[in-house]
Image 1 (cartoon, one colour):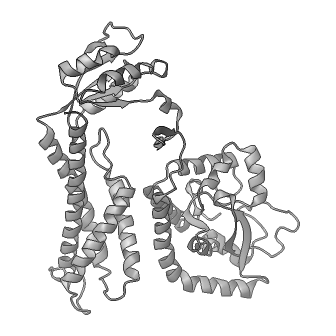
Image 2: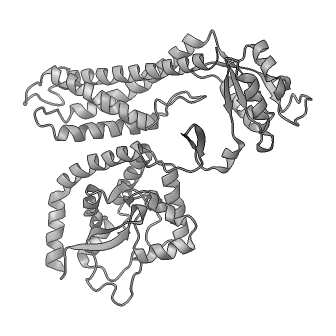
Image 3: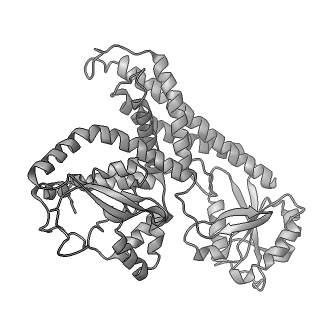
Length: 473
């Protein structure tokens, strides 16, 4: 069956996932509409004083929501097929659907011709999540049932721990069944079988792969040779080229690379990128959309509070309301970070640039209160709105500190490959203020290398929890 059949099966499963997600969203809207406006709960729990909107409005909203949610699910990798996968974790589905609902609500905020019940929106989300989960599990079972009579047959080349790990994972089950046929020894590897360490039958040497594929009707050949033996790959490719078989390679070099590489080509010559920034291209567009979808409603909602704080600062302490300070952002570009002024105007005249601490005596009375609840950070939402910062990212530092840290801390400059953030992975792990910069840098680089929308949402939730717990800095 080979490559084409395998791709057909993967495409079938991805199509089934899209279909089940679409059905789940439409059903959730229909059930949410019924519960809110026609169920026995109307009256005891909520009234109909504002009337019953047409069902057509909710069905149209369901279609628009499905488009947004499916795009978000793609960003979360919920349609990406993996070798051995039982489907996304419930937590991933929760985060993705919650983000989809936030984005949908943000779009609906600017669409005034039709209003939606504030009760119906959370009802729809609560109904949608289990429907999405059950639908995806059902599609996995259906795909497995469709393909179980003709499992893909595979062999491993290389008697290595990586090869055995892949063999166990594929043979363990999943939506697309695989049957392990055996293993072939790589260059210089012994031909004597070791049944305790090697559960697969030994079929011969790597240079016999052509005959093995034809004799055993193999669909996938997985080459898992150590780095010093990878010259054997040339012979494997030569013999498999005329055969209808999928050949995959486990590069031993990947053990030294902290994240998956990306492949490109220039004039027909393939290039493997051994280092890439996840927050680029469409990922950057999606992150920017999340920033705006959250920032604009929050600014509108907290506008009265920000105005009140500005008045109190002006009345209780001489000096400007806002504190503007030059910081270093993405690509080492300078920008002015805005905060509510929480210290005396002459705070650094005697000390020069220094970090603050929890007992800093230079704070004003209102400044201590704002810092306890992180209210002094609110004007940075304007930096986010202008595109100078993001909601989540490494905290920006002053040029004075950046110059010092780049000389002292390996990899520190990589923090500037992405936008600075109001909060970050280091901050929610308690690394605030005057703490070892090496530790903060380690957490910031982990965030950059492992970014996802789910990761951003997790950090935002942890930040909110920290603020409510009054863990000011």
